[in-house]
Length: 75
Image (cartoon, rainbow, N blue to C red; front, top):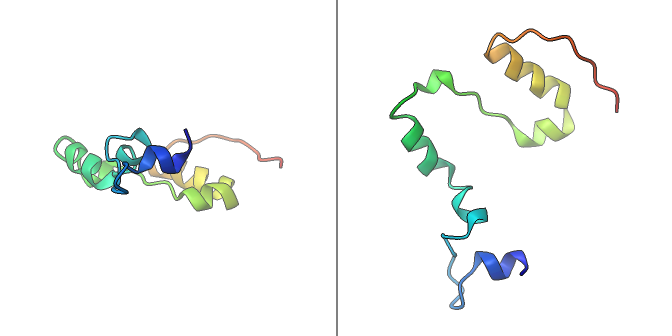
């Protein structure tokens, strides 16, 4: 089954029970998590930067959680 067949119902509405759609509903998930954690306890990774500037994005993650690691990136 291709993505379009899975993501849309037979009457061309979004299939919200399809995992690829449901899992991407970040607002719904964040609302639940924010009942238990403060927003300051989250770190959001920029997926585009993770691809284009992986070292910078990983360093941002490390800095956010005070993780100190020495690593190098060799393309």
